[in-house]
Image 1: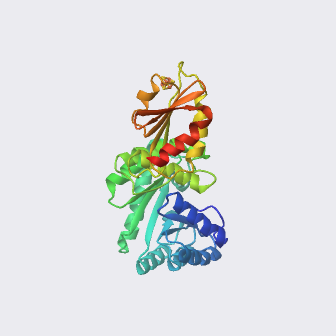
Image 2: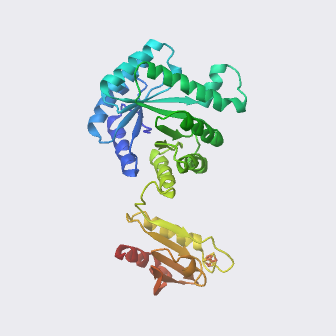
Length: 325
Ligand code: SF4
């Protein structure tokens, strides 16, 4: 999702393109004001990727976004009180062949009831709310739906999405709400989204983290690569955990290598190991491995020892070996 004002066209288009380069296949854009849906029409014309308009409370914004060329709109029908407004949005989406992602989230269930809902009832209530929304759309003859049920809670996210996948045949969008700073968002996102995706649940995903949205995309991509759902496009760095045999500062060397690898756009496995006793064996499946000893390192390419390097030669020779793969 973009995180700059939608009306700041140049920055918004730049951010959409950065997200696509980072691996996004869909980009969501907030359109809270009329000026934003006007900007959306111009952004659609400048980018290749499908754009999703993020609607909160305004039926007018939803219809404007549909007419502006959004590929999909994201809507929480619970925020739009008048059924006639929902019908007008559905009719516009049908006319323009635009999909609608309908969402329920745990927080809105609480609001709806005006009182805390016991934890064990929340998944059932979210499911029932989703069922009601789906019925409203289907009764109007609309089935281009994507479903999303969000919570800030990892286990709730897993539970409610399993229930939704069991109950309905529509595509599902996965995400955790406000997952945190990037370092805090990584683990809950990987657990919730990874568990569901490994079970075959989920058609689109979004990792939420405060700050630069390309970091969110990076985390999402790591989850997909770990599950074998995306090809690796960049080097994978393996670093031994270190132990009593380690004679050098492995973390320092690995950080140095990691920085150098940021410039490499080749899928390969690179290992940095802390000794020459077990290192070569433990890095046997690496394309290129550095097995370090005091003030020197052994360079292995595809399991074969190639040469011994002085400390200053390690990174340049490693990069050269990767280039030759
Ligand atoms: S590679 Fe060597 S230093 Fe690293 S964990 Fe294994 S045995 Fe220890």
